Length: 155
Image (cartoon, rainbow, N blue to C red; front, top):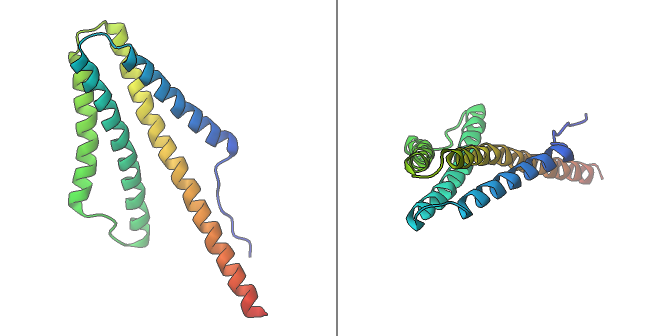
């Protein structure tokens, strides 16, 4: 019996990493040339980092919930679910509010907003790709362990 383990193609992995790096680059350029007060720049940099980390945590949480639901187990407590989702919406809301209230050119706001949303979507895609790779590696290791035990038992 042959076991099929799904892996993302190399071009897909390359595309995901390139997209994420482009998003990081665009955000870094936008934030580094951000006109206005130092406090506004610091707020936006912290907001972008908060959103980025919250997106990775949310992606992991959702994936863990799906896996545990399939296995009929409880992965996380309801309070942790509230913290993860609340943190994500708080990060997105505060960063969006900070961007909206800044007194800068509307075109510049649009650039920052689009690059920010691009970063968030790319981070979800990157998190899924990395998790898929990890799960495929674990599946292959388990399969190799079973096969080696099976050949040792036969001998």
